[in-house]
Image (tube, rainbow, N blue to C red):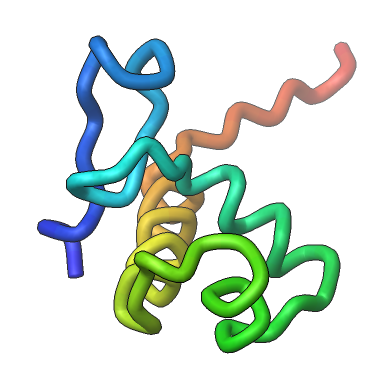
Length: 76
């Protein structure tokens, strides 16, 4: 799935996009947040996408969160 997402500084200022498109991972995730199904996203917004592209966006987001370092400061 990772080959479906690319980061190119020449496209959307380096935001992660679905490979071969200018569709950002963020745009797809925002549509999912609004409750749209994969089929609705493809039919109504991005007919050039495949279900695997949307799944790759979710996987990418999970990987980003999983690799995030959390720093908790305890009040003195």
